[in-house]
Structure formats: structure tokens, C-alpha cells
Length: 212
Image 1: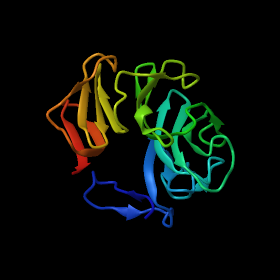
Image 2 (image 1 turned 180 degrees about the vertical axis):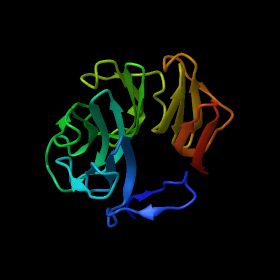
Image 3 (image 1 turned 135 degrees about the vertical axis):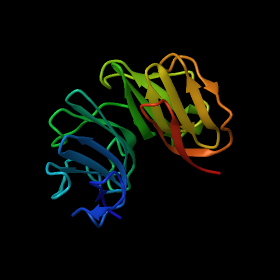
Image 4 (image 1 turned 45 degrees about the vertical axis):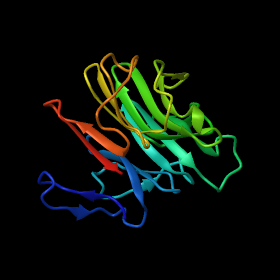
């Protein structure tokens, strides 16, 4: 459990002071690091993980993290500790480094993945009350409003992109590809798997982790 750091390109690892939480998402900007945890919200470090502080976004799953300019976005899951209207999922936004957060929409959706591409923010979701509405949503106004894309047939667990090329890892449906920034989608030859995470490197190679 917790957050580990490597200073030699992954050859060796050292655990940070965040040791007692299940961490399921990370985002970094310089020496500032944000960690999303299972049921305990987001933790913030301003010193490369030497010390950590729990943010105001707490008591819930933080499944995904992303940033655009000076804005932070957190995709959340369920919590059983509150009766608020946003008790299940949605996206939260912070403009002060994670000190405070505001709800920016998509109640009743678990947001498993977030990806900034140009001036757009994409959210891979699953809908708890109605799984048929799961899929990929997009916002072109920093999360103030969201639109469903054509990829709407399964929960979207992971996202990656380079240029206008986007890839989405789906629950039980493999990898889908969009050549035009998320407008049209095509299924690749990776089918039938649960694609949990993906990454595109500078050589345009795609790496993915899946469960069959």
C-alpha cells in the first residue's frame, strides 16, 4: 500500500511517508504530487512525497486524476459515508492545487479515467444505476458541462493519446481507437479483455495492462 518513488528510472524504489492507504491514481506537477486513494480521498504532497496532507476531497474513492493548466480534476467512485447528492462518483475540480474542490458534474457515474487532449477533457465512466449509459464523455469547457461520445457501449477503464489519436480500454471489450480526437471510434484487434491501464510513449508505442 501507499506511494513509492524511484529516482533511477524504476530500477530501485523507496516508499514515501504515505504508507497506509491503497493508492489507485497519481498526478504530478514539478515537486507537487497528488495521490488518489480508496475511500480516503486525495492526498497532496508539495515535497516529492516526503510529507502528505489529506485534502478536502475525502471519504470517497479517487479513481483518476488529471490536470489542465492550473486546474486539477479528480474522477471519483462510490462512498458509503455520506448522503450527499454526489455520494456516487462524478468529477471534482480544484484551482488551488487540491486544497479545495468543487463538484463539476456526472453524478451516479464512476469516473475510472480522465485524459486531457488539447483543450478537451475526456472521462471514462461506468454508471452504477444504469450500466447501459456507461462510456466516454467529453468536456470542452473545463468540466462545466459534458457530452456523451459515440463510445457508449461499455465502461471505459483507461485512456491514452498522442496527437489526434486516442485509445480507450474498455471493461470486457478490449481497446478502441479514434483517429480524430474522440469523434469516431473503431475496435482494435485487442478484444474481450478488461484493459485497466494504458500509456503511449514518444515513439507512439502503446503499452497496456489487462485482465482476461
